[in-house]
Length: 464
Image (cartoon, rainbow, N blue to C red; front, side, top):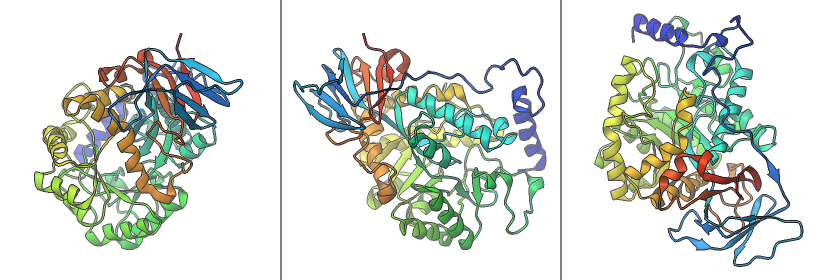
């Protein structure tokens, strides 16, 4: 990447940034369109000691056959499932005839900080503003029925803590914290004029937990352990070239085997796992051979490499990236790299399904409030390769199995996630109609979700 190209990228980014992003922008009384995006809901937030849901068809998240049963929620857990449950005194009763009760959705590749914020906003502000943007993005995700997210890079430790403490409303968060990147790697967003960087000196983005630049085993061990210290439930390594990054061609392999294995060893010592960003086939192979338990993207994988996932019990956490309405806004350098991604999507999904891989669903929405609104629509897009049942199972029961790789570091040890069963967390959605027959119902949560519940608390209620 030449300085000329980098200057062009930065200038176009800042030129496209809303005026209100700048410290001394004028006209503060007017909120320019798109500055912080639309707040999609004002949550009702109703909490009852007991809730009984009657009359719904129940999809438990794992089994294709729907059941007819009442569901009793006590506190934050599902207490009982069965016919004609006697409601405890004072219970809130819901007549859900005509609705399907499904588990809350899980996005296994989410970025709360990056989903709705623009690059200009992030580059020209600090952690306080980032947290406000993330809090809004998290609230919006919850309003779409996503009750849990695995955040796969970014400064989300405080957002996770604030959510669990009830300070803000949003999905449960399994945070990776700042991703580890090599110099010039996928998460190196420094400018060329900022290098060389003195040994031991941290970039402002590193101090803000946006990313960590790690070169050599000592650096990798230190940053891995610092992430675990701050509450990471898994560790994210940028193991290969990416689309949105400025310096790394898509074909690159990032981190040496020694560096990679050091991160894996330190992470497994804490009882959890490493997941990697790897698009090109060689980076995917490098990740699997060096101990990754989950690989994000993998769109350029060959059949032989996909068989490696199966043979090594590794999760494929892929996104349905296509050259369509959900494609991100990119410059020409990025578009050339993105084509490698979209060219592989169909083959990898079809082959992974044929081979019986463990497949997780995630959106990986970046830098666009408009694209983030389509979180449910991206899930519905999966019916191009999977049945509605397979898709919903992937976004509930299967994704919850992936989250279990965090082992003793899970922030939610009281019961299972992603399922409707006795003893599970009460994360559920009432869908008007049957999404196992019409998956497109998931695309419009405002119209089709009659209730959204997380942790036994009702955040949306629109049932006659």
